[in-house]
Image (tube, rainbow, N blue to C red; front, side):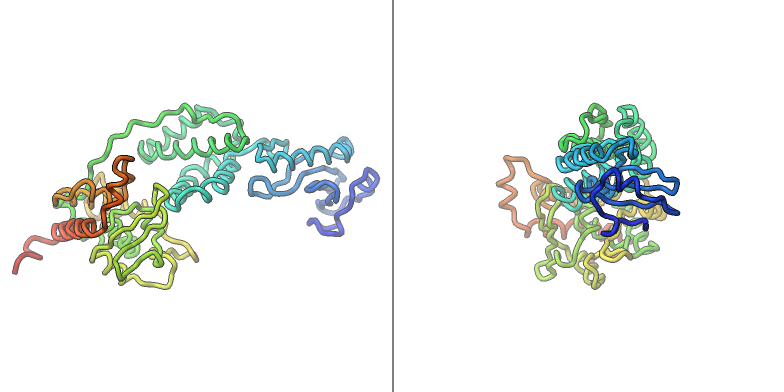
Length: 393
């Protein structure tokens, strides 16, 4: 017989039919036609083992039921049907072959059932980035039953040491969300991260100073990756969040009205971003056939957060204690320096207004926002020029 389950290998299990199965030179499996997902795996030495085979929370898995004939056919069917029922209800599945749910299982269900359905693209991509870079390598195979509060604290401490306290706080939030989703889906009962507290955060006031702008723009012009340099320029010229700029699509840009519409922002709402002249000029120079403005080499994908490249840029520019998010803050700071109201700055950066200010924000049109952005951008570009350039003729 072959390894795979084919129509010829499907029949109604009986004690007699299963005892008659002869061992082969390698493992093979047969399927029961009465209980969905019930298979019997036969090894070359004649061991016959029942499994439930099929999808569990989005992944195909083989869940061990027991060895035949110690476990009779009727009992195997009952166990398999019970597993099918728990999966249909979204409940946790525990078995000797899996050793219980892993954190990777919880991530898969969180991603498929919550992140991809309910979260804005920027927030979803942030979750995925944290999973791939900070959780997946060491936590994917961890058994949920073995994860304690001490493990979460250890993860938080290590992340704070290597990436900073803010990153540790963001990662802790994601871990809590993954566990909470599993609780809501009745897959687990306890969230070991529930009582772990975030590190205190101080609001940053860092932005590009006038004497830093020439160094910053010079480093951009000389950077070894023009695509990434353009990404940082657009971050600075629009004040948009990194994730939104990374996933910027050509279809969302109206060159005629010079407006970029972000379909969903952090608040899961659309945002219209005026595009200043410098941004329009840069975007037109980048026109390509890709879906994304900042396309990656992978088909249908965009650039990911260029963290290591940012470190190289800062070293090249001779700048310290500057984050990519500070580019967003820089635009707002130069608007404030030019006398722009907090209302307009908030509109520029897409800050969610308080309930009392909602109606006021709704009445703000893009013209004063655009003018404030143009003025701030012009001030930054002027400050970036060497002394004596760009003055009155």
